[in-house]
Length: 351
Image (cartoon, rainbow, N blue to C red; front, top):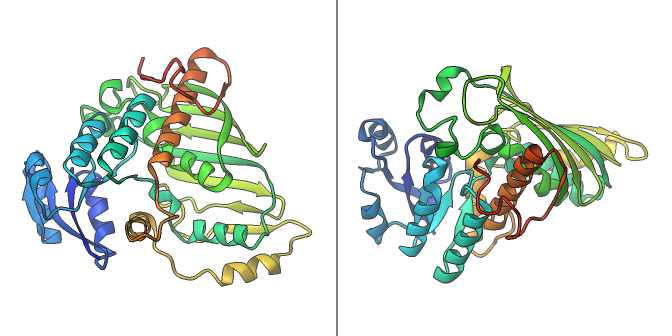
C-alpha cells in the first residue's frame, strides 16, 4: 500500500520529504502545509505536490492518510491531537511533546481514537546500527560494561535568529532536548532502560535562556555505566558513541545528523575473535539510512510487520530521560527512573 502524506512545516520537513522520496513504494507526499508559503513553495515544486497554508483543510482531506508534524516543539501536542481526532495516522518530530503529562495525555488520545502515532528518531536506522544488531543476534556482544556519548556541535549566535529558538517558551529546552535527544535515544534502543542519571547543565556558548552544555552520568538497568558530554560550542559538528561489551568495543560513525549512515568500527575482545566479528558483519546487506529507514520501518508496522518502528513509548521514554536530567541538574542529586505522575516535574520541566 502507498500512503498519502501531508508534511506540516517546511523547515525540517524538507528532510522528511527527501526521505519519503527514497521510498515511493510506500509513501507519496501529497501536500506540504506551511504558513510561510514562500518558504514552502520550492519544496512543493521540487516534489510535485500541493502547497497549502490551511492545516484544517489538510485534516479534512479524506485522501490524506498520514500527517507528518514538523513544527516547533510547543505546537506538537495540539497538532498531534487534532490530527488523531481527524482520523489521521501521525508522525511527529522530536521532541514529541513538552512534558510527561502531555505524553500520557497523547497516549490516551491514541487509545481513544484507535489511532497511530510514531515519533521521529532517525539515528536508529543505518548500516552501523544494523551491524550492531547483527552482532547481538549472533550472540557475540555479551554484557555492556561502560560507554561514552558525545554530542559536540557548533551553534553560533546566528542559529538563534529564529525567534522561538533558545527560549523555554519556544523550544521547551536546550541541547538536552533538541540536540542530544537523538543519541540518548540509542541507549534504550541498544542497551535497555536507563535506571539512574546524574546531570549538570550550563549555558556557556550563547546568550540564550536554555542550556547549551551538559555532562551526564548514567547507570543502565543492566548495570552498564555511561557518560554523555554535550556542547553546542565545538569547532566541528561531531556525534560519537563508544560502547564496551564483553565481546567487542564498538565506535560509531561521527556524522552529526546520520550517526548510523556509515559502517561502525568493531574491535574484538578475547575470547571473541576479529574473524568472528568480521564474518557476521560481512553478512549485513544494504540497509536504508535515516529518515528513509525510519519510514520503511513505519510502513512495515502499518502493514502488520512491526517491531522496528519508533513507538509512542519510545517518545515518552526520551522525555522521561530529559525530565530526570533537568530534575537532577536543579537538585544536585541523582534521579532514579522510571518517572510517574507523582514526579515534581511531571507536568512541566520548564522553569
